[in-house]
Length: 86
Image (cartoon, rainbow, N blue to C red; front, side):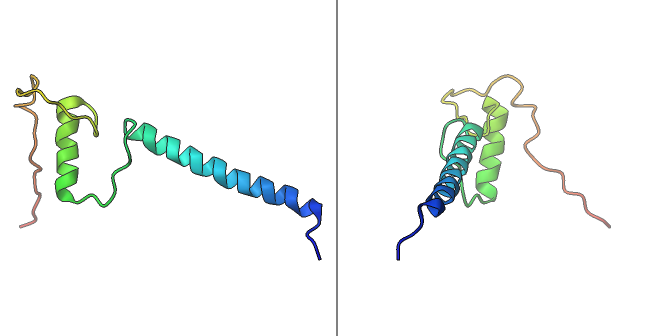
């Protein structure tokens, strides 16, 4: 027994919407990461390097090849203050 043709239209719509949402998610992730692939499995080192890149270039994914830091980088605060209760 064959599939009635009326069932193919909703199936095509559902399949198409999965494709549209997948493509939209891909575009949004690329846009958020300056056109690069999104990072995954970031540890503390990666987050600190992303923070440093943000302070140097103004972008989490940007990198600079300058051998000198931009003005104001030497006074920016790279260390976190740990609050302890005594």
